[in-house]
Image (tube, rainbow, N blue to C red; front, side):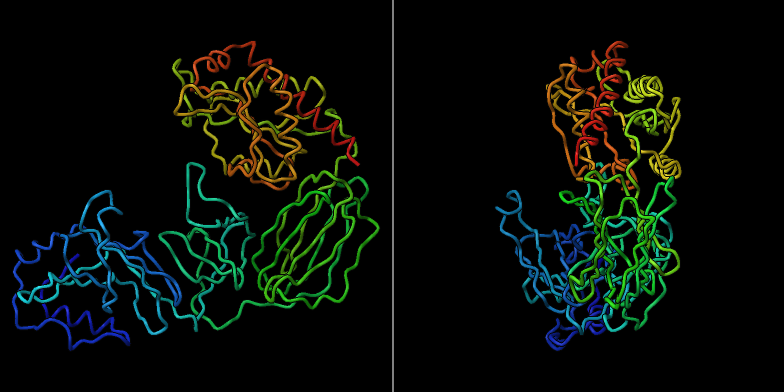
Length: 512
């Protein structure tokens, strides 16, 4: 987008002026700029980095890049320079101008394309004003912007990086949790969790409330820690918070613990009542780890965590802690089996043309038979070649609350020589399940590819039950693919996965 009339430039300059701007030094308004003069600048693009709608506040970095003819003088609306990068930094190409500007309290932009001044450094023509392709808004910190989450599984990302699995997840939030929006990049709001921590959340998951002066902090009150009846499955830690504040959580090991950080909460807790109905919760405590971060610590009785969930009941935060099953035998447990992909989602395909979805379904069906043969109750996320998205699978699993989940997949690589088997977990507390599966699947003589942690896959995200993913072998490798399409191998794979589950249960019984 470009403007070639000097008077128009002066209007823009006045609108976006800041303290260091000097309108009197702008180019004379008496010159006429011809289209040829503008074209001679060879401005190919003017972009923010990232090239998306941005909401910024003082202290944030505004990065702009311009591709044009070499040898020009380029600056932002306030004369902040965008120097030309040496060709060596741009693969030998000249004419790339880039710079970073720290947003100042006096700056004002409101949903507008950022003006960029381009000068050919001669006296023949005045400045030319171009603008970024995306719009920028500068927020006023004196008027904080708040919103509330719109679903029970709104997710937060650490940052904006992505790969085929999406952005790295920080955690999930309950519905109607109030968050402070202090920025935006494209379709993601940046939310302030504490004085030192931000997160990103998709804009469709938050309904804005508008500017306000509310600080977002709240005093905690008393706790109630109780459990179901002796035959029940859960213990509950209830913390009176005063409002639905954002939180993150994780499971620790050695000792086994559940940690929940509540952002914007300040301790006014003077007692915590623990009831005799508890079966899994051993102790509870709290720490004010920062002026605006209140930490809930839940010690578990067993070394193996069996899952938990976090949500709100009114304005009390409730941590629902799953008890260890009383009998760690397959015939007493409910096992969820997930056949990866399905329907229109074919997954990876090797040289034979047999899609991953067909192989995973056959192995999952064999695994179902293996488990039911040992009297286990089995829940299948799909039992036919149908399309089931991961959101639907997760919803079904959270409603069913199995004792554990195994997801079956076929791996793929751009390098056909890569082969082997691997298992995946996201939460450290669930690594024992993935490791046990790995040990038994390796008995098939497959090459080792690894037991891989922190895996950002949707079905490894739940904290409610132990879960692991098995990448049986590489469909992209000719030798592995021949194994995968073999009916006997599929049956053997299912048998080893079942043995891996039993190994996990046996090792859990031994842990003290």
